[in-house]
Image (tube, rainbow, N blue to C red; front, side, top):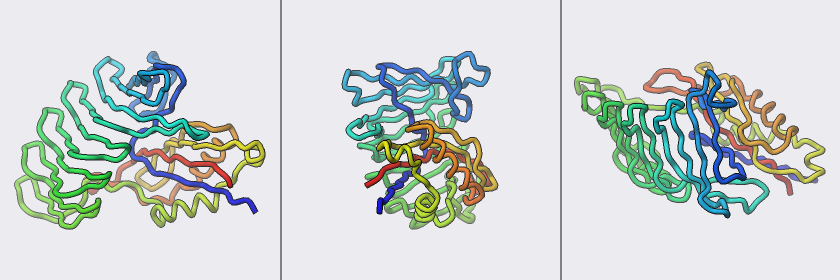
Length: 278
């Protein structure tokens, strides 16, 4: 009996398609959905991906607002040793507001966040401070109101909150709740993995041809936990891509929706799905 392997990784940042040329330019709307060109009426961002050498093992990505202001800059290691390409964030990653003020900055050590994670308000005042080791939040973390008062204070070990406090704008202690709660599939990661194994079907022709790789689907989980605006941003084959979308659509209504500052919110994230066999 053949065993089909479907593995996944939830990624809450944007997964970028890799191209063969040394420089590649793409455009996106406000929700980061790809659009055809700069002249598209919904174009809001322009992203330039540059490969400094012929081996294309390093990608430097710079994103600009369509009006020319810098929005972000980051870099990735590229692995093409398998049947599909993988990129791993490395080094400093920075985002800016349209007015040129730095919005956030953090560092990656071979794919895992390391060191300070700092955010600012648009006027330059500090909005968040935390620290990461080996991809996990460690030690004290702070969120601030625009007036400089502490909004939220927590102590973490390996991403787990040990102690948390929340304050009103005037500084009074009140009931703690996290800044952001991401969408959670019914049963968590284990539930999602089980759902994929039970529902994914490897297209027969592609299986016989030995076609395999990683499909990357981006989609929105809305305030009701329903899935919408799905898009395949990294393709393997027409049949495998279509199968990935079919199963993502089956996930609709199975998510606990995201919350930002305690309020229900839509959340767009990326789901890579590996089609492989043994």
